[in-house]
Image 1 (cartoon, helix red, strand yellow):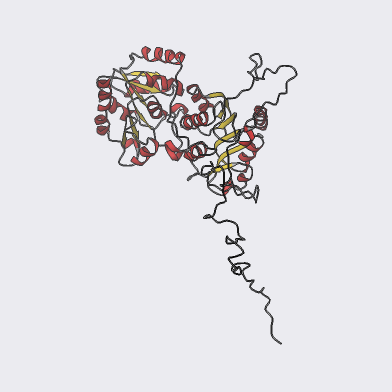
Image 2: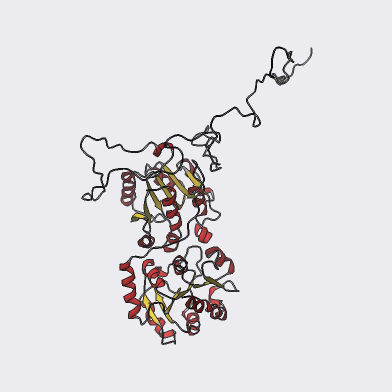
Length: 466
């Protein structure tokens, strides 16, 4: 008895070679197949879709969701282009919560159809992890939101130190103190969830590396889109189930990315979609109020400095949190003995030392032998930006002072522990009128003072151009 195979027999291809038919019966060759890429069906309208963001959706959320359809055609109302300015009624000025003025008999539902179809964003909340340095570098992301979504309202949740930055940003509506990296009490945690739910956000952005816990916090906010960085290791397990979009950094310390630490988020926000071309990444810029300028001017005049005739020195060694360091570069403060040698080489300008705490004033007066110096006590980034704005230039380590000098287009000398750090935190230094001086030993305290003295020619050049 012949043994029969348990394997299924090979099925011959169906209609792969259709029988030849007389040409007298058919004028065209019949086809039983879906058209290939070379045989498109006639279309009266050319597809206007641009290349979508090529990232597959989380299969755990919907196993049948493979992302956007590249063959989908757009062109109807509420689909193409950017959103319009919000046409809602004005807010009630007498109500602290900003309730709208609705006439009697009118329906309160005034949301446009584009809010759902096109993905418009009317309200956005940004949860920014880190201190002053990280929040300053987040400014281009906020500007990107304003450019990409006209009429958007941007709110920020940040640490107590990070919140101080937003007096320099006119694009932020509300800034609340809530440290994403902290361990809040249950009452504060649940209260913040209620605040986020009551504001009805369309989009929440987070720069904190999310695990299941932080992803749950964002999920409970009831926002339509929840976008966050996640851990690049096993700690991210489960976070993707609750988030709309995730970014995986190269390192568990996001700040090690330097100036472009948020490049993945910027790339996603500025992606070309719905007939909107790729949005260019805006530069870092800060705005200063007249009240802030006048307050700081009184401070540096009391220290004996005049507008445009002093050099700001920032980054003295201290244990104060107001030093405004980056989490990605812990070796970014210099001892006063090294600053003394640098201050002696400054000619034609008055060195103004910025101290982060009043207890440092006595140390500066004792160690710095140059009597023609000024000492200014400044703890907030807004005051530091105003001080830099009226100066002739800045000499600083890798603190917020360097980024503020670049934002106000002031000449600066940046002191780094290594050349690699300098390129990461201050890219395109020549375009920003910044000279990077790095240590050859990898330690900031061993920096070549002679190289710093030679770089001071940039201040004389800027003075000659005025």
